[in-house]
Amino acid sequence: MQINGTYAISFNTPFGRFDGKIELAENGGKVCGRLLDGKSDTTFEGEITGEDKFKFTVQIPTPIGKVNSVVEGGVDAEKLSARATIPFGSVDIEGRRVS
Image (cartoon, rainbow, N blue to C red; front, side, top):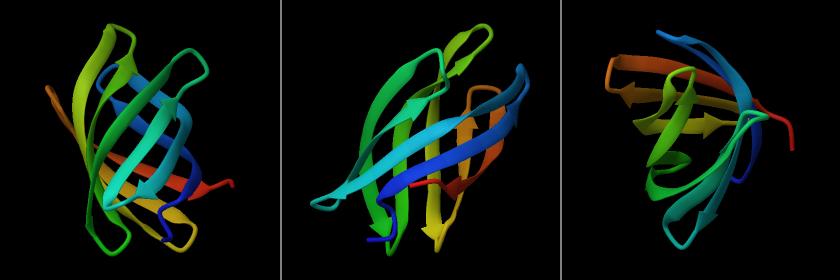
């Protein structure tokens, strides 16, 4: 599975830029992982929705606290692309594999 790995990610929210890492692992048709930003470590579990595609719910840290987000995306070679739907709209997430 191409999904397995650690990715450096970044995206802009209405409250500022997020830079961090996301760890993804496929396990029996599910995806699990951690969202890391240097201040917090948030775990999540979701589903594999297609070849190298995923969907999960996670709390994204922001300056006003964590907000619930539904993340849908995929991995193509070394690149991660996703869209997170948050209470204030949606944000595009881009990342690259670091391990």
